[in-house]
Structure formats: C-alpha cells, structure tokens
Length: 225
Ligand SMILES: Nc1ncnc2c1ncn2[C@@H]1O[C@H](COP(=O)(O)OP(=O)(O)OP(=O)(O)O)[C@@H](O)[C@H]1O
Image (cartoon, rainbow, N blue to C red; front, top):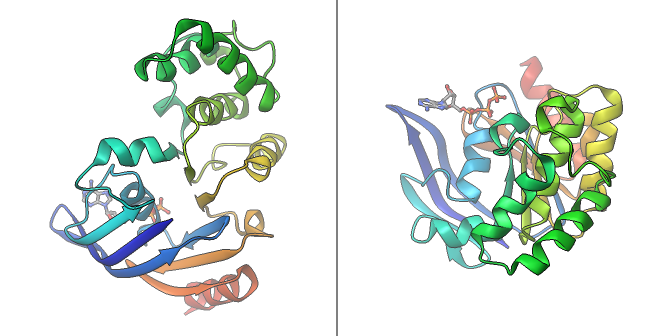
C-alpha cells in the first residue's frame, strides 16, 4: 500500500525526515512523536503535498513525486483544522465540489453527497452553513468531503486536536467505521488503542515501529530521556 525507500525530506534549509525505509500495509497505522519530530511532514509526503528530497514514496504503486495528481486521488488527506478543507459555505455544496471536479454526472452527485452525510451522522446538514457548525461537526463535514471521493487510503493529520471529548468520539467512531486503511498522526495516545501498528518519530527518524503498547512505551521513554 505505502512504500518509502531511502526518503529524506528537507524543508527550508533543515533536514526534517531522514532515511525513511518503510513498507506499510496495515489497516490502522498511528504516527506519534514530539512537536517538530516530523509527523505532519511524513503525512504530507503520502499524498504528494510534499515531495521527498531524496528517495521515493509510492502509494498503491504510484510515485507521489512523479504523479501527485494520481496520489491525491488515492489518498484522502484530512487536515487538523477543517477550515483548511471546507471551501464552500454550504455543507452539501462543499461535498459536491470535489465530485464536480471529477466530472461525475449531476444525477449521481446529489445521492452520493446525501449518502456520505448520512454515513457521518450528518443527515439533514446539507443545507446548513459550515461556519455555523461546531468544530467537531465541521471536522465530520471535512471527513465526509474526503470520503465522498472514495479514496483508497485516509491520512489524518491530528484530526481531533481542536475537538472536545464528544466530538473526538464522533470523529473516531467515523474513523473506526471507515472501510479503508487509515494513517493517523496524533498526540492523543489513547486514540491508538486497537491500531495495528504505530510509528514513533524522533527528530525525523522512526525510533520505534511496533504495535501500540510497545510503541507507546518507547515514545514515553524518548519523551522522558
Ligand atoms: N515550511 C517549513 N519550512 C521550514 N521548516 C519547516 C516547515 N514546516 C515544518 N518545518 C520544520 O520541520 C520539522 C517537522 O515539522 P512537522 O510539522 O512535520 O512536525 P510534527 O511532528 O508534525 O510537529 P507537531 O506535533 O508540532 O505538529 C519542524 O522542525 C518544523 O519546524
């Protein structure tokens, strides 16, 4: 599903990721690490938002640097702040936007938008204005906006950071129910319970790559060192 081969990433004049060699195929993959350890940079490599300085990133066989457009079709990317994602004022209008861009016939767009909203507990929200929704509802709209495009993989960059407990639970229930693989960067270690694999980043390198209990223990050791 995801292959990183000898990947370095420089941002500005700094090396922020070093020599990443990873093959990822699990259903739920967590990414943790201190502030500035490289989690967001790693997530952004997966859909071609950032290109490696050295090495290759392949997602479902697509080289994200050579064909970022195809990479973005494969990978639905959710930002920490849904306001970076929601483009149109109306909820249904916003979800329809991505589908129109994909030249879907008009007759199919409405039903697909309705179905995506219903799936995230947002039935009846189509005519609401996004800026009038709560932060958690907006994050769910942003997630529905990605899922409606049916990407093969979801990459979520700290999707619950702005949310209260109730909305965190709603977003995580939606993530758990997602019928496709998920890569999620987070500072909230409790969310990784039940994940298959967790990567612990430390200063741009993968310091531990293990199931949650072992990985989170390693992360705590690094944080306390
Ligand atoms: N546009 C940029 N130009 C230069 N350096 C950058 C840029 N964006 C990020 N960095 C640096 O890259 C490093 C990794 O940042 P990144 O955002 O990937 O970390 P992170 O683990 O997601 O951090 P956080 O937990 O704070 O979100 C940091 O040292 C950061 O200062």
